[in-house]
Amino acid sequence: THVRQCARKCKQWPAFTLREPAGCFCWTSCGTFQSSNYWKGRAVTYLQHANQSLLSPNHSFLLHQRVRFPHVNNRRRKVGDRPMVDCSYLRQACVTLGRPQPRCSSRCPIRDRPFQIHVHGPHASDDVAIALEHMHGLQDPLNPFGPLRHLEQDVSVVIGQLPPEEPVETRAARMLWPKWEVGFSDVQLTTILPLGAALHQGTLGRERLMLSGALFPQSWEPLAAVTDGICTFERDDVLGASRVKGQPLPRCAKRECFARLGL
Image 1 (cartoon, helix red, strand yellow):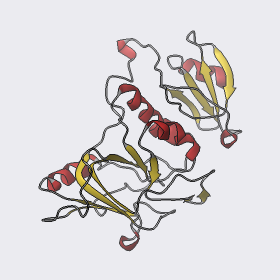
Image 2 (cartoon, one colour; image 1 turned 135 degrees about the vertical axis):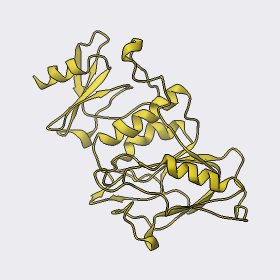
Image 3 (cartoon, helix red, strand yellow; image 1 turned 120 degrees about the vertical axis):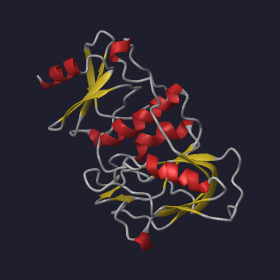
Image 4 (cartoon, helix red, strand yellow; image 1 turned 30 degrees about the horizontal axis):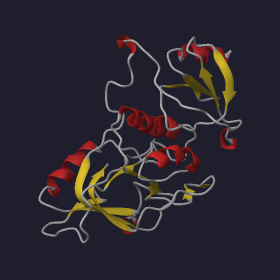
C-alpha cells in the first residue's frame, strides 16, 4: 500500500524512494541505480517507466554521469528553469587546512577550526562581504537542526599582500557543505542530485569539489570522474560517531590558492 501511495505521489518523476518511517521522496532526476549493501534494509528506491508503472526495487543511490530529466509541462516545471547550484565566488583565495574535526563544524573552538580562507587583492573586501551575506543561512553539515554554520571566523581579508603563491589563472574549486553529512539519502537528494543537474545544464565545469565530509565516498565516484577531483576539508575518516564506509575520499591539500573559489 505504501509503495502504491508513494508511486502516485511521485507519478511526474522518474523514481522515488520509500523509507520507513520517514516517508516518501520523489527524485527529480536519475541515472542508473546499482545495488549497495549500505542501503539494504534502510530504504528502497523504485524506478518508473514513462507510463508510470513500477519496476523492480533497488537499494542504491548512486548518480551516474548522464542525468536525464522527465518531460513536464510549464505548469509543473521544477527543474531546468534555474541554476541547480548557486555559488558566491572569492577571487585570489587561499585555503589552509587545520586538523580534521570529526565532531564539530560550526561549534569548533577558534584554535581548532578545520580550515581558514584568506582572500587577497583589491576586490577582497567586497568579495568576502558578498559571500558571507550569500552564505548567511548555511546549515551545520553535522547538525542541520542546530545552529547555522557561520563562516565569519573562517574567511578573512588580507590587506596589502599578494597571495604567497600565484593562483593559476584557470584554477577553480567549489567548497560544499552537504545538508547532512551523516544522513542516509539526504546527501544524495540535496547535494549529489543538484550537482548532477548542474552538470546536465552545463553550469558546473570541471572544477574541483571540496566537501566538508563524506560518509559514503562511493556515492561521489561518478562526480569525481567528470570533475577535477573531490576531496574533504573538515573531516577525514570519521564523521560524528560514524566511520566512513569504505575508502575515505582524499584530504584536500594542506594549503592551496585559487584564482576563483566558490562557496
